[in-house]
Image (cartoon, rainbow, N blue to C red; front, side, top):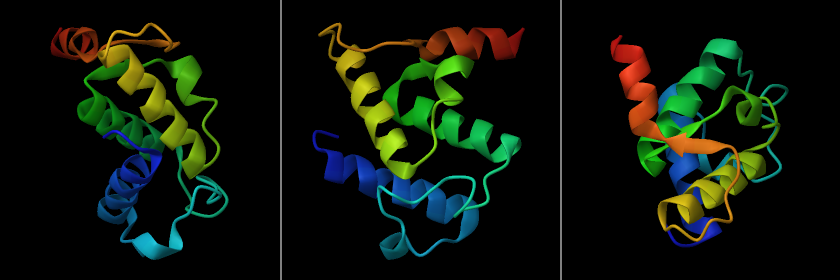
Length: 104
């Protein structure tokens, strides 16, 4: 995933799997709650999918800031930069930490 368009396509696929949405209808301006009807369980599912795709953990605080599909694209961009080690990312940690917590 090198471009925002690739990230958007990945998110469209995730949302299609979760909600059977028409990928063409999902834009960066699509609102997660108002337009797609995400609830708290759906948000956790989406976060898990983003973590799996990026190899990075999404903090609860960061998850709460996501309002639109474009916000999720931005999150994937941030997580990608952390994975590449350029240090420009923010509230994320390696996904292995989340796996260890879940396994306990």
